[in-house]
Image 1 (cartoon, rainbow, N blue to C red):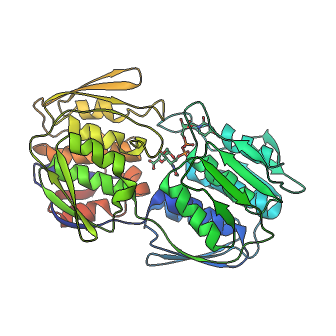
Image 2: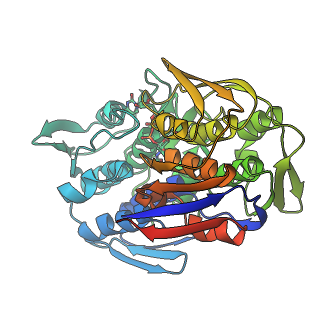
Image 3: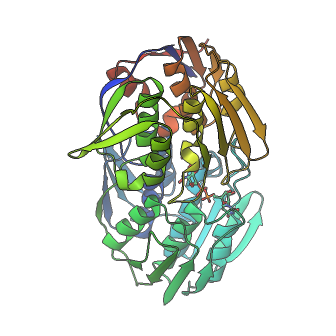
Length: 420
Ligand code: EPU
């Protein structure tokens, strides 16, 4: 297990290229199972989660080839059983269920467990698949689904905490090969769902309304191979913008999409962070003094839960009281006790954190607990004076492509060290 050694207090300066989006590419990789023909996916980020999904596709019988940032998948002959241990390790793997069921009429996939950020149930995924005609049972830790054929249906997919991103992806993929028309109500509107729908349409699916709460899918007999370029990672982009502001530097982002980041940029503007367009690039820096904010995470187009931890890292540097409320996951404050090791004053009150920013802070050893929490610890480490060691950075490698190398290019003093 590696850790990241950071000598903080150095403003980040320079340009960074934003990679393809992890949360777009994972369901897109699952979608390649819907056809026997070759699919070519470009702008694929080099991440451990992506390699892992590649192994899952291989274990199902697909031919998988990574060449630079291009991935080729040919799922000519596949089996409906996912390897228990492989699938259990990664939540995103649950989205192979819809494509397997749709193409093979049966699928057996291990139940994804909970994770550090909360229980992460899949009841809504199963509700949607049932509505399409799947028979579902849970046996020995596996979800077993079969169907003589899937038939289009009207499905309300909203849950207690709003729509589900991967649930929408799963049901949308299953419906592509169902008989008749499926309408998903209360669908997730995230750009990653739109990217998946665009890929499926390139494969011959008939999907409209993706990006809105109502998605209509007209079933087709079969899908064919397609080429697709993955959208840029909006969470990686937000992370670099916040890192630029936290270190009082100036970072130019190449290849990011501002239209996917409206809520983030709006809140950052309030916090005293400026993001300006320069041709196709975005330039991020402070606009003056940092200001405290009151923010609540919401489904897209609201402020994303995946940026909550990083914003908190900025707010511990910001004099005044900020309130950060998490409404998507019930346990996504694992970064709080770690940030407190730096001297931050953060109180957890139910779903909210009260951050009294501007306390004297200094580097300290911290432990990463999940992907976005790790990013927050790195941002804080970059901003505060002294040496910070963030251990267990395999979490970062799951979702940030070459983060340490990108930070070094921006002038950060970071070193990846093997943990003793
Ligand atoms: N939920 C249910 N029932 C379900 C499914 C979800 O109650 O059947 C609840 C969840 O417990 C949660 C809420 O609905 O409270 C939203 O969860 P969602 O299903 O939308 O999350 P997900 O699809 O499993 C994806 C991303 C997450 C991101 C969330 C929310 C991938 C691989 N993961 O998860 O990304 O936080 O959407 O935007 O796409 C990350 O990248 O660090 C990450 C955790």
